[in-house]
Picture 1 (cartoon, one colour):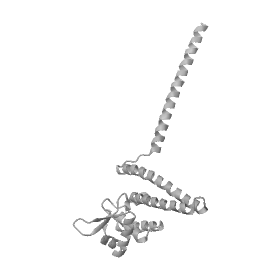
Picture 2 (picture 1 turned 60 degrees about the vertical axis):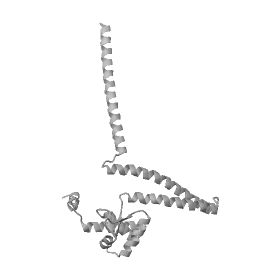
Picture 3 (picture 1 turned 90 degrees about the horizontal axis):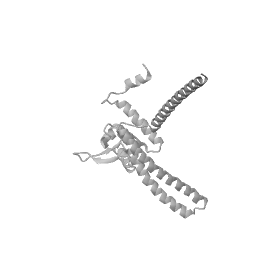
Length: 220
């Protein structure tokens, strides 16, 4: 059996969940988020929500699945809510809160980052004014400000492109402009050139035949 076949065999069927594999994913992804700078407990709670089937869990459920204290869950939830990666909602028919990770969590986080960049830019401008734009420190901060402004403009464009790409993904269809363009151009150009060349060749052959016939008639 090939490696691909073995992977397919190990993959759980629809509606089934391998709790051990899910737990491994949660811890692995959480560790990578920690390496990227996220707080460890926040990373574990976020990964746990992300891997849950409904994307919604209560504090008690998070505490049980991750084997951590309610206080640790509360601290992680507070951070994730502040950065816009999860939302809090009331469980129907209960006073308990539950926490939801949305499909657009990265989009929401980046949108929040956009407002953070705006505040940073304002502070950096004050720094340039205070230090003087012609001083070495002022130039250094001015370049940082220019980078933030550039990032904010690019972020707006990128998020707009993502919305279009996301809609295509959700519709179950993703276009590949490069492949489409390449295939269309190559086929059209090749077919057109080939057809025209064959026609020209045929026309040339007819012309030569007519010329030969006229020459033979003149000799007679």
